[in-house]
Length: 74
Image (spheres, helix red, strand yellow):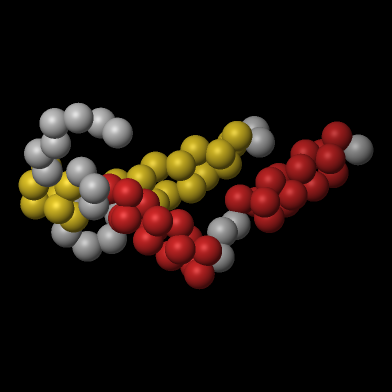
């Protein structure tokens, strides 16, 4: 019984952690908009999502040509 529960839990977690490519593209566009306020980006950011024990780990990375200068945060 425990083996079946563990397998079912893994399947459910895997189903919840799947993000469609369309959704991922929208999220990355939103990130790019925000990051462009502070950096001159080279291309879109990249994102890796994993799920362990019901907790999502999201890593976002991007390349930038420069950091924009700013004096005061709004």
